[in-house]
Length: 95
Image (cartoon, rainbow, N blue to C red):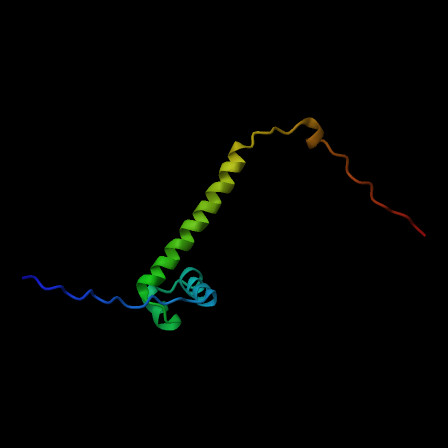
């Protein structure tokens, strides 16, 4: 007869503070450190680090694409009223 195996116990998932995540993004994106180097500084596992960086880049790209689609769809033309302007007269009072 077959015996039941015990289920494999998985490790606990770690939660990181927003400060830790911001620090790792600064190190990787602004200072150009590799994920391996940042892993030792921040204390977040390399694979998790890569996930946070990818998630950040996807969010930024989505925000940029939503902005540009709005600008592209905006097809208002300037009229002569918008372009013409009268320069302000300099306030030159002498004493």
